[in-house]
Structures are given as structure tokens and as C-alpha cells.
Length: 237
Image (tube, rainbow, N blue to C red):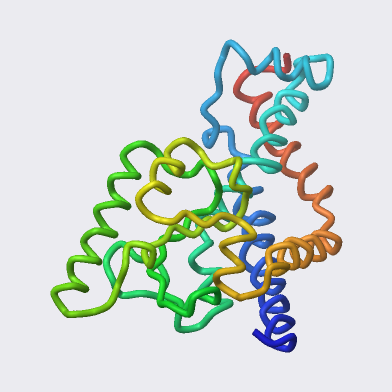
């Protein structure tokens, strides 16, 4: 990858993050967070959490205790996780795969072999049953390749995890890694681009988008809308 190509990819990543992740978070995420029906409230805890956060259990304090974890945590993480394949497709046109169970195919920058990759968001995104599903997909692809006299080795079937560190891999990923390579964070992006610094570059350009975003008004608007509904449903205190 040339320096010009690296800059083009980072500029595209910035556009994707702003238009697909940030806008979805500000609009759809905030709308859902403002509706009481979208919460599974634990009746034993909501007043405690409000008091823990603000020292009272007013409707607004309850709303803040509900909205903040949603909008600053689960909402944006879910949105990002759902769009990882779209991110890769947007950055690298033509990497999509038609092979069942495979998200993308690409030429590995480290060994120049074609890799068949399942994409995952972070280091804790599969469960026990997912491991068997991935293994079966990979074995099926290898068997089909052999039938068609294609040169696909076990190490050509990989799991690519968009972010994280190797020491953060869950036990499920560690078990999977014993059969097929699991590349996470910096090492995944290195295999994909040939640039060891690309992962950190990507983090930095996403951070640049964050500097242009001030969501305080939207956050306050969301809290107030939810607080109003809470007061109507649960009473003033």
C-alpha cells in the first residue's frame, strides 16, 4: 500500500464513521433512548441508580441513569458492531465474498495468499456455539475447495476482529484460534493493509470526527423527553 492509498483509505474511513455511525447514533440511537418502552427496567434498581448518580430519584435523575449508559455505551457499540462488514466493503471495494460463511476475501499483505475471513467487532463477540458454527463454515469451504482443486490451506481461513488486543480475546476466541488463525486489532489491519500503523491511524481519524461532534444538546433533549414520560408513568418521585 502506498502512502497515497493509505491517506485515501483513512479519508474514506472518516466519512464512513461520520455518516454511518455518528449520524445513526445521534438520530436513531437518541430517539430509541428517549422512549421508556425501549428499556427493560429493573424495578429494584432504577431508583438506586438515580440516587447513586444524582442523589435523588426524580424523573430526570432516573432518566439520566437510563440514558447515559445507553447512549454512551451499548447504543454506539451495537451500531458499530452491526456495520463492520459495511465499513470494510466501503474501504476496500471488491473484498466481499459469495462463499457461505465468509464475509470478505483478500490477499494477505504478509504472505500474499488469499484469505477467507469472517469479520467480528471485538474480543468478546462470540459464544460457545458460535465457535462450532465458524469451524463448520471454514471446514466446509476447505472441503469445497479441495473438490474444485483449489489451493486453500487451514491458515487461509481466518477470523478478523476489528478492534482489541490479543490478551483481551475471550476463551471462545482462544479455543477457535487453536484451529484457525484469529487476528485482532492491529495485527488484523496489518494483514489487510500491509501497514503496521494503520490500526492506530484509523483510531486517530475516528477521534478527529469526535472533535467535530458536540452531542450535549441532543443528550439533554433525550433525557428530558424520557423524564417527562417517566413522570407520567411512575409519578414525580
